[in-house]
Length: 390
Image (tube, rainbow, N blue to C red; front, top):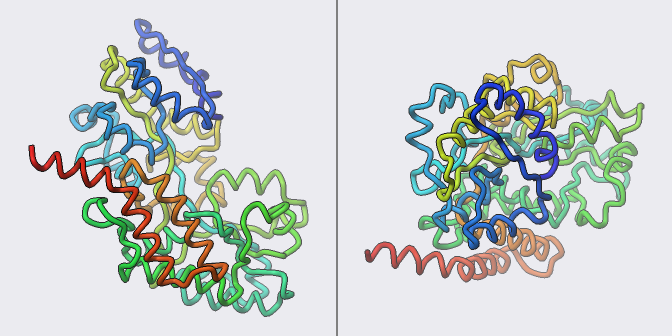
């Protein structure tokens, strides 16, 4: 899908030289159509041999019995070294104790910030705890006008409240994904911290649609921090003016008592059960998983590699903006591995936005979240109950 689909063909000639008996057909499709096309292919019994799957899609295709378990292939492989992959990223592909994907590139969230504004507030290094982070933002806020905010945290984004909840041990869902866990103490604590940033006017209560130009706001000092992913490195380099270029940096997410966790995201390579070329498909998956090939893929796309050894590449090792991502990837946590996750994620920010705008109290918000998510999971509970009776 997307940019990855555009450049993947460039990696195929070298593979085909190694395996002249194998010809690879790369089909590129846009992200906006990918999910529907893959589901249609499954229904029509026309799935590809291999597909790139967003990590949150893996549980859905596992529920359809569409993907081949890869544990035996991975354990006997001389190329796939489980201990060389970031642990949290690998776990995004493990559903019900079985592995259904090999991480291909990784994504997580951390903080992009103005180093000069932080230094002006008296900080040479970015804080690592919630308390110190809040203290730093308060000092930055003291030097701002009422319409300027230390943190831009759009109200229509779900990663932030989920990240804060994961940092205090919330499972997000409970009972093997049968019910929401939003009223439980862990999620409540993370959500209270999330809400406190708006209450203290440290975060601007606006949606992404209300931000006309993030980069201009960053240049003007109207915001000092923003939580985003690795693609933002290139955007910052290309779109910030010359005066701001020396004054920005990345930092891992702070946690309650020290460096915190973030989301385990990205895309993996999965093998479909219906494939008639499983041996050849696995050879291609091994090839694309080699550290040298992942490094080449990084140079072509900017996507971060999931194997630790690939980070020894000079371009990555010397990329000062990527270092925080390397550190953060040691502390990433998968989101709940249920097919309904993307719908649940949208529901989290929709309810959160109502709390931010004072439409509902925190208690009402969390109760509504549990109620709505429990309704989404009704089919899952039924299917699990049926399976338990067999």
